[in-house]
Length: 86
Image: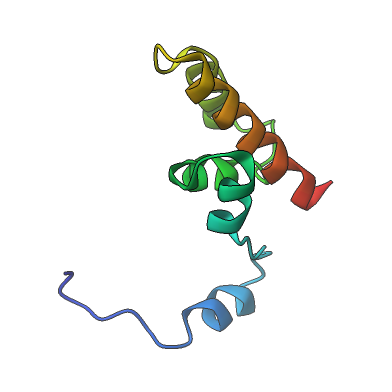
């Protein structure tokens, strides 16, 4: 992959810098929402809505794909992700 290996204790290193980490079992949540492929959408859920890219992602979610089920699953996955930090 990359030229430098990732540190073994990467989560501790990030935490030590004052960054709040949230663990998310995105695959299980996405599976419950109806599609394991929606795991990335679940991970956007805990992000603050004040971030412009999160709002952009929500707009994309609402119009992505031509299948209604795909949109519904993504919105359900996003909502489940939001509940993690609620």
